[in-house]
Image (cartoon, rainbow over all chains, first blue to last red; front, side):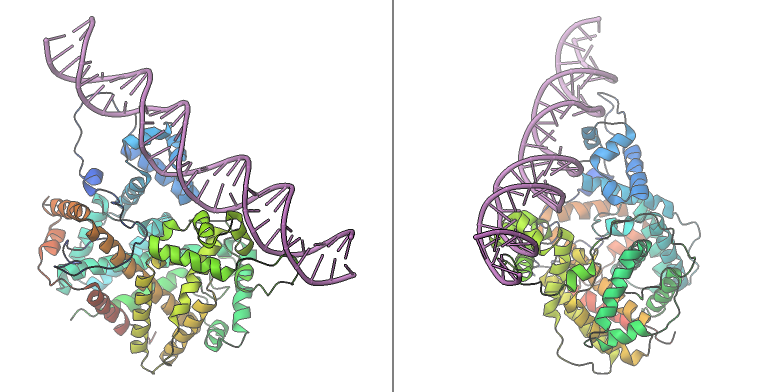
Length: 256
Length: 256
DNA sequence: CTCTATTCTCGTACATCGTACGGAATTGAG
DNA sequence: CTCAATTCCGTACGATGTACGAGAATAGAG
C-alpha cells in the first residue's frame, strides 16, 4: 500500500538518506502500463490468450500449490501457451503478481453501505480481509511487495474511506489507517498460516517446543519462562484475531 | 515471530484446513541445529571461517547493496571462501537469513530497566525498532519469513515482556502484543522505505501521481478524490509514525 | 488480389541462482 | 604411522526470469 499524497515524503530540500532496500533504484511497475492501458488498435494477429485467463491461472496455481509454484513456465503450461507468450500480456513476473493481487481483490465486493458506526464497520472490513487472505494464503506474502493499487483494490479502498468519513480525519490519516489495518490483518494471517504449517508437521512443532523449553529453562529468560508456563486457555486463531482487532480499533484515538 | 505456546493452535480434534502457504509442508529451519548446537568436538581440520564472519559479511552486503545482493556466491567472495564452504556453517540460505536477523538484533541492547509506565516504555521500544530497521532496510522484508527467534531476539523479547508486566496480561497476550508491535513497526518502516525509493526516481513518482490523479478524476472514487485533494500538512515519516504509534498504544485496552 | 505494417506466438539461449556430490586437504586420537 | 573426523571447494545440475528474433496471423492500402 503505497498510497500517500505525492509530495508528502520529500518536501523541498529534505533529503531522504535511506540506503537501498529490496527493490532499491529499480523503477518497479509502471501504473499506467498496468492499469490504464486502453484497448489497443485492432490490427495484427488476434490474441490467443488474455490477461484475465493468465491471471486466473496464476491465482489458481498459487491457491492450490503455493506462491512458489507460480513460475512463468508453470503458468504458461497451465493455459497451454508458450512461456514467452506471457510477456505479451505482462511485462514481467512482478507485474503478474500485482495482477493476481488485484484479481482476487475482486472477491472483496462490499454490498452494505457504511452504518455510521465506523469502528464496527472497520471490524467488518478486517474480518472480510482475514477470510479473504485465508482463502488465498499467498496474499500476505504478496502484499508485502505490492506497489500500485488496481481497480478492485481501489473499489475496496473507496468503501473503507466512506466508512471512515464519520471520524472527521483528514485524507492522509484515513489512507494511513486503511493501510495499517490491511498490514495488521496481513501480518496476523501470515502468522496464523505459518503456525498452522508448523503444527501440521509434528516433528517440526515438537522441535520448536523443545527449543523454547530449553530457552525458558536456561535461567536467563525468567519473563519468557513465566509467559510460556502460564496456563491461559488455548484460543482459536479467530478469537485471538478478534481480541486484537478490538484492542486496536476500539482504542483508535481520533481526536488528534 | 512464531511465538505461541506449543499446543495453542491445534487442540484435540480441531483440524486446521488452511491450504499450503509460502513454505507449506517444508520443515523450514530446525531451531536446535541453529541456536543450540554445542561447541563441536575438536577433531579434524581447523575451521578457516566462522558463522560470525559469514553472517557479518552477509549483513554488510545487505546493508549496502540490498537483500537481493546477498547470494551465496557474493557472501563467499566477500570473505574469500569458496561458495560451498558456507554450507559448513549454515545448512542453507534461509538459515543464513535467520542468522543475519538475529545478528543485527544484537544492536538492540536495552540498558534502561522498565520505568513502570508500560505505554511509554512500549513506545520507546517501538522507536528503537524503527531506528534499527531504518539502519537495516532489508529487515522488514526478512522479518516476514522469520521463524525461530535467536538469542539476541530473545533478549530483546525478555525486555519487552518485563515492560509489559504491569499490564497484568497473561503470557500469551504479552507475546502477541510484542509480535504485533514488531509487525506494525516492520510494516510501517517497510512503507517508509518503499516510499523513499519511489521518491528517489522522479519519473516513477510522477507516474504514480499521474495515475492516482487519473483515478481520482474518473468520478467513481469520490472519497479517494477528496482524500487526495485535501490539504493536510506534509508530515515527516517520523511524525506519522509517532502519531500512529500513539493511537495504537494509548488505546490498547488491557482490561480484557 | 497483393503488399506491407502490425501484432501475437514461442523455440532457443543465456546469466544467475541454490545446492548435491565427491575428492583433496588438514587435523587429533589410537 | 594409521585412521576417522572435519573442513574446503571445484564441478555440475536443475530451475528460474527473460532477451532475442524468426515465423505466423491479421488488417488496411493499393
